[in-house]
Image 1 (cartoon, one colour):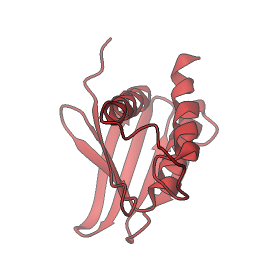
Image 2 (image 1 turned 60 degrees about the horizontal axis):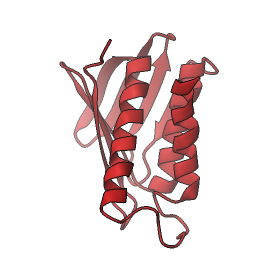
Image 3 (image 1 turned 45 degrees about the vertical axis):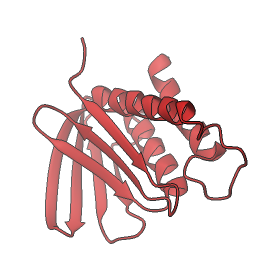
Image 4 (image 1 turned 135 degrees about the vertical axis):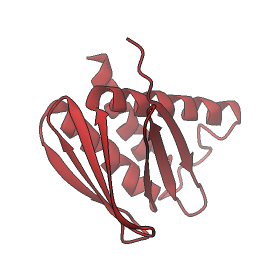
Length: 149
């Protein structure tokens, strides 16, 4: 069965800000953070641990602002609370966990393929703190391998 979830990824190479948007027919959730080389592996590791049932909840803080996210799972669904300060409020989302993971996986693969077409990847040199350095890419490949088991 084909999922209706879509993922769009934006990574700012200067400054390292990231945004992962996942949408369904009824909602759009944006995970935003600074310091992409830290935030991306942490985000992917958290999703992996939720998917494997190693944890049932986690809290992720944004780097660069005071927002944070609470991720919880009942093994079938992913519940996200975005506690925002601009705009202020608590925003709640519910996704099917596996489909959310698949959307992130597919979106990231497409994003990497586009960067390869543009000649941006592979990186010519490994810069410390680059949001798509080897550590980040390895974190993604480990995350992606979840779906191939």
